Image (tube, rainbow, N blue to C red; front, side, top):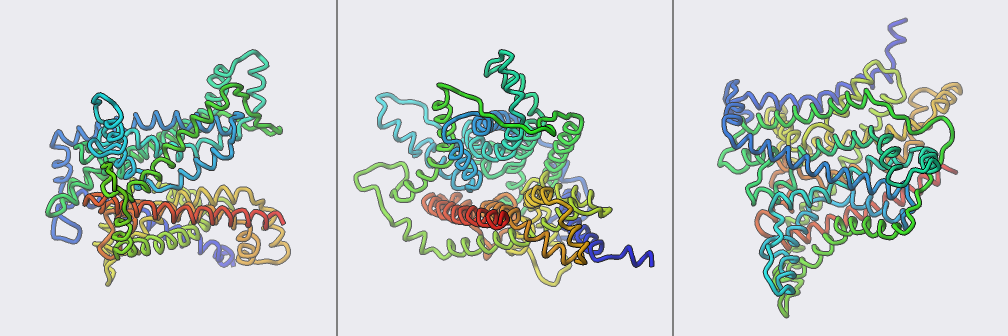
Length: 566
């Protein structure tokens, strides 16, 4: 009878879920290590060897691209974190005008796809035909050096604009939760604004800022899209673009050195995440106590409007300007060439009549909806087990769910590619939306579990206990009590995963086939072929799709919040 008492439906489901997630996450990563010591392509005859490591690290070029990766990551991280912290402080801790508008703008930039914005900056700052360069040459009476987006400076500029909103999302809650009485006490003791910020705010927020810094550095190390679109043309290579080059540019993919570099990148990012965990585990700065507190805004006085202008300028450079340029360039006969009759809708007619566009849009929407729906169900179950149960494997489940956070998208894609090509299944997964969706579900798992966990911790255990006291089984309690309370968090996580899947390139560029092209791979392909107007039009369409789903999610969240209050 004791054994029977231990075998319950929740325990069986928890064990099955742990095994499923472990296989989905660890098997592709194992394939990365396997591929790095295999002498040929996946599925082809070969033998175990260290040839890939010898080939990769036997040439000076590899050390140069390691240096590029590190230097670009450091510079972009420093600027991105500094701006994100400043914006978080302005929006959450000061009386800057229209704070709600600024926060909504930063949130909207967070959801905006990266590829169209990169295309927009190419159209703006291309050395010869960039709109800004052409404009400056036309209005200035003297020649000036062209602003070149295909450079280290261009990669840093676009990278900072792209990553600040993401880092802001992570650091802003810590600012919002800090006890305002600490700042009041400093000001009453005669401290000025600068002294209060540097001696009170920053030290207390050190753990959150440190976590955001490490997160930013990890993401900059594994970045691919910006480096591929802006760096390859200027012969500026990093780890991710070199991995891509080994597989795409030769007549036959050179897998051994590519997989060796993938292992290097994987080990580096894991080491950084472990360093973050250890460092944060040794530091504790309480900013919220058991007593009530008020997050009182700091009076900026005459600096209020300049601060608002600076924050709005960042949003304009990150969102309004790129979207406006895409719209403008899409109706120009030749971007950057100004003439009397320079506007046309011919590009729209040609692009919208191209069947590959609608195939990419259909595939993207279907894939994003599958990733968001299946991913959130999986993340919801995982978060519930970790937060609300005493399952013996909950810590392992939590750790495995966070592993994809440290895995570069292009490395995870390589793992799934090898797993698919070596799969014993009677059908092929390579080049299908199914394989791409699986990869994106795993890559987006940390986002979904974080969203659901933050919702679950707000649900008191008393509600479930009351249901069970009244005779409800575990399944009845979960369906009739827990699920309705999770609706708001589920909706928020759904739109996060949907937007992530719709705009992601790194995790699918190695997996897409002729019939499984999606918006991100199609934009990248058109850009490589020089079809800039088509890429701009598709980028605008992608932005419109994400905007529609973003607004729908906002309305749904408000509706669910009102129902929860009722």
